[in-house]
Length: 256
Image (cartoon, rainbow, N blue to C red; front, side, top):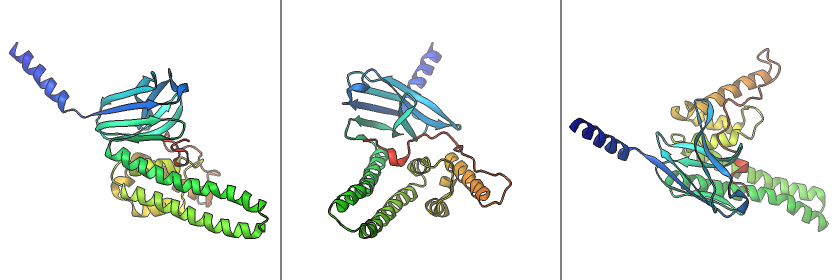
């Protein structure tokens, strides 16, 4: 009997010491009521469901044991909605027609501060097309419009590149660096090398380089580069991503 009690007490102690994640969500989107949401993350090269729940009266809740901090994604069916860093603490997810956010824990706060900054830059780029239309209506010469807006577009693109690169570099050794790298590269039809990716990899730490997604992507991109440069017999670059995408492209997150 004493052995049984001892084992029971030990189990309670172990359980109390185990780290957990706790996601409390709310939504003002009535169409989501009754829908099933999933938390999925990349594991062993496959997207795995960590937890699922129904949206009831605009509320949903995920919880579970936390083996390690990881970048997950909130899904409805097969559609990725938004990234969520699963870490210890109370994670607050808010969904409405205007915005989507995750807060309450350090990495989620950092990620969504970055996403908000990126969205502001993207909105400035999108605004250029509206300004072009207005300038045409105002009778401004098309060549002058192109000169002005192309210069501004180049500056905004530079700011966006620097924002993303700096964030990844500052988070090389935690899940945010590889996670945002996934968002950036998921916009491409197949793995490619860009000046931005080359710059990131030239400065990368060993931990970042050895991340399974980063490593597989970079290897595939180098192979595709060799094919396109005629250095191998393969005629076309592979269109397959090195692994399933655990997050939506950065340009789509969060959805408006």
